[in-house]
Length: 113
Length: 111
Image 1 (cartoon, rainbow over the protein chains, first blue to last red):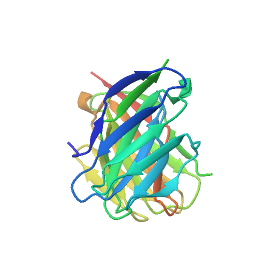
Image 2 (cartoon, rainbow over the protein chains, first blue to last red):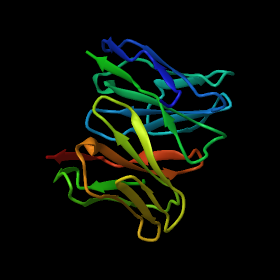
Image 3 (cartoon, rainbow over the protein chains, first blue to last red):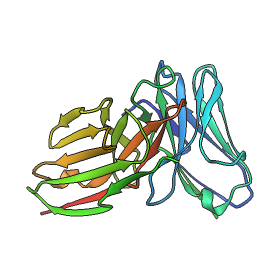
């Protein structure tokens, strides 16, 4: 158990729809990173939030956006869903920008039909 | 662009045998991580390697880092079935300290 909670655990959407995924971090973990893991591949960095601001972004289009709240919880929003967005979305938290270890949640599995 | 390559991609080994998984990466980094992932599950942190020459051991697993060669190894000693999983290495890069993951090595330990 890492203390990182993600919701929902599974969801199914259709192309063109929008989705919001949520992440609650461990107490004191003020940095949240989001990763996308397609089936059979390693996770890919989407973006990171630190002190409620985006602090780095991977190679993902603007329809992937996020928020971090004062309590350090976070949301990942994806607009105009495409079939290739089907994946496991992982939230990872850490302390103070980065201290050498990420704690991953169990993930949200998104299926786009 | 940073590339992180693992080999082998798939490893079937008998219980009791030893083997090594290799992780090569293409640009300078002083921080490397190993994770384990069971099917349908999230990532479990195994090792954090923070400097050249770092070696860490936990049970039957031992990880090492050679930053000059841009190589990390994960050595498995006397494998047991419970070690069956997919193992990822990940390299830290950039000011945002994002992790770039390798392709993963799927390990299957058979009786």
